Image (cartoon, rainbow, N blue to C red; front, side):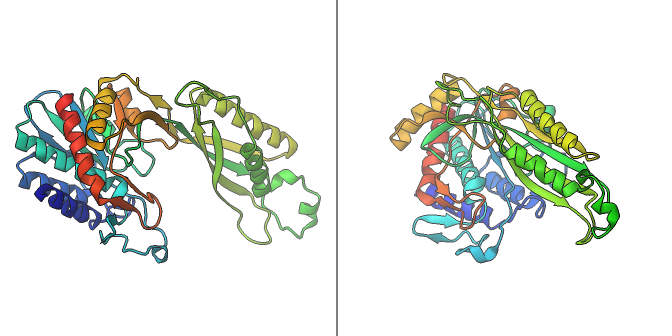
Length: 386
């Protein structure tokens, strides 16, 4: 009961320490983690590529390669319109068995549970090394530049298996779709919309109209990419235009327009083929709308990933969940991407299980209080079995 109360208080402290990506550097929340860990006799380090945006590493057990690595990200998305919240975004308010606040479930609740697991392991005299890594800058696109990649480059991140403490315990996520984020830049020619010059000009001078035609074509693009009989079966390639900006004034033909396109990838249709299909559509529109020019850039690229359902980390998590939670979470694929692709690439097979809750990236985000301690117990049991 004492640890459960301590865990709730820690989760509240984390929520009450804002760490919105691009607004609040993660240093403050990393210090909350470090202070809690040190107060419980755990080994702490704060390696950083950017001193104001450090990682926080917490270790328990003897030296050596960890059997289990627990990963959480320290940053959160923005609050959005505060008027949409019924509970203070950084209040950590508890109502009806739920703790509310930005980051409650993504991933400060999981971070608190992971810390509690390390404290309990230390109290038990754990005989194998376990590592918790709190990393910055996940919410900007899961590139891992300041976090996972930096730790790996410094030789600080290794393990026989990892759990990323994202929310949810009904399924055991062992992979995710990929992401390809493109930036399209359309170039036309500015002129007065009331002039005869524009009246007699080719439509391709209008960069906004040309971009709109491209985005409409991309939205309708479909691929033969189903993967029946695999964990990717529920998913397909999805192309979503997400932002557009162009034009200089209400009576000026737009000479420039920029748009971003978010593409979710599945292994059946690789990035190169999707990109080629996008370029084909762009070329077709350009041919119909001379003298329109369009440049295509890649802003982000994350490959699809999946680990073997028989990996020791998967087996250990399923056994622990069955023992602690009373059910066997079945392996599944996540639609959104996350940083597990990097850990998999670095030879640390990674799956996802964590506290329950809802409204990540939305108003009134919350974590279920009871699930915090249960998640900590699952993490502890996995550490002992790895």
